[in-house]
Length: 305
Image 1 (tube, rainbow, N blue to C red):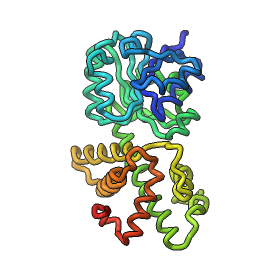
Image 2 (image 1 turned 30 degrees about the vertical axis):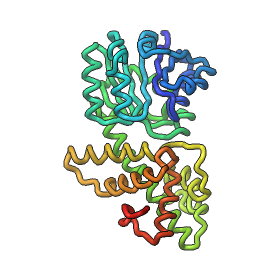
Image 3 (image 1 turned 120 degrees about the vertical axis):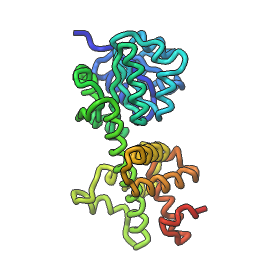
Image 4 (image 1 turned 180 degrees about the vertical axis):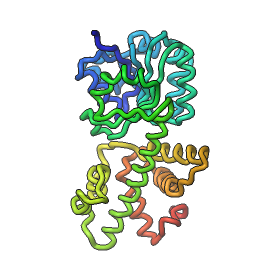
């Protein structure tokens, strides 16, 4: 049986290594990105470049998206000459982006009107997971459609978990990001406190390894915070802020209290507003250094100049 032809939209931090994994697995991959310069690595590994979304649709059985936010997905799908205008029956859209669950449901309905299918499949595991094919995929959508694309998703992931109908994958990703975002904020506090207390913060990740406080983010991000090693960028402050804002919105819609997420979003927004929005979250240590120098408590973060 011939392998499915894949179209991949979004050559960002995650999209590039994910598309390369699919090429290595033997799939025919056509890529599209607004900035065509970012398609260079996949092209070097055998990818085709589509000049338009219409061209990508025509050459693909399965269309994958991995872009920045809800607005970006909506534009790609709904804009003139976008995906929706060029879909033909039977195509499957797999959205790896982390976007609003309700927007996901609405997009899925529009796609289904064209006799096509939508799966929301946001991922966790970062750039390293994308490069190694060890991402955790949390999926929402029709079970039989998901089962039909598992061979395509397996080169990208260590685990694919169906969470329910369309939108449930995005809800699960928001829950994931609540933990990750608050975790990295606490890590910055920990590192700053250790340093202020005369402890070598570089030893914190090793000291906590294997204990209840250990985590993958601690082992990956903690040493970089301690060393003030902010390059290369593995993820973005603005991405975590976007996810925290979605968590707050989802909680409000469902009347669920999320006070830690509210504070986390305020702290992340404050840090991003100081020129760190496009920086790696490792830079959060800089915010706590500033607070400590000004003898500010976290509750006074709004007063930081």
